[in-house]
Amino acid sequence: MTPIDLLSAPLFVSWQMTRDCDLACLHCCTDSAPGKRLADELNEAEAMALAMEIVRAEVPYVMLCGGEPLLVPHFLKIAEFLGGQGVQLKIESNGQALDARLVERLARLPIRSIQISLDGDTQEIYGQQRPGASLARAHDACKAVRAAGLPLEITFAPTRLNLHQAEAVIERARAFGAFRFNSGQLMFIGRAAQLWRKIAPDQESVLRFRQMLDRRARSVDAGMEFCHDPFTVEDALRRCLQSPPATLLVLPNGWVKVAAAIGAVCADLRRDSLAEAWRAYRAAWRDERVIAAIERAVSDVAVHAAANHWQPLVKGVAEKCAL
Image 1 (cartoon, helix red, strand yellow):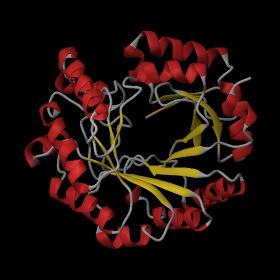
Image 2 (cartoon, helix red, strand yellow):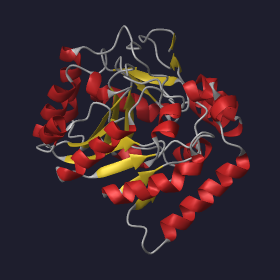
Image 3 (tube, helix red, strand yellow):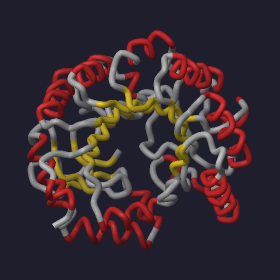
């Protein structure tokens, strides 16, 4: 028995609301981009039904992410319903559409954090990694979040293009009043895997980056929390094998994925209740196919490139879906 077997519901739901995005970032692990909305994404009624189940199950914490969740027409309706029922929320955004008016509405909700991506400290570098994006707009979003008194997280995806600006981004995050800086080794998933030779930093640079994060985290005047452990996907998967997280990862079409770095899908929330999905998730961590897939992903990073090729473990879910 693992700790999750003692829980009647997940402690955290990570809800990828869409694959649509206003950007096509080079490092994107979900391969999101403009017009990439999946044909079978949950509609407003289905999303609201799921939100109601989350509330009934007394799930305490939900992350709304994507793609870019702010592009979902019913994003605010879902966020305000969940928040109005006391569910704590985390919102992940690239910041391009997060203006002061929207932040003002979010500030009425129990927001645990708003996470904005800053993958460079100059427009030139930021724009290389996030083509078409405005760094000034992302900065304005950060300022709006803090002006509203909301907790701000900054995330940084290290690539060959931007590693030389990592410490400048850390200082920028501190200046904005972020309480946390999130990073880790670039993941070999999604568009990053496709563009690996172009954007992946060399191992020596990655090692220096990790040492810098360790040093900054130990500093007495760090000024914010550094979240970079586990540093690699493989380390995270090893920990999951030892103690599976009490988390449901919900895909845009309502399918429930066992872990981000493998393709296994254990439930379909269009068909299954949240309670049934939670039971299926707990059972998946005892499934020999899941254990074997994770062990392969730990031993061979190349396997991560297939993480977005969804493979259902149970009957009743479509036989196979690849993004």
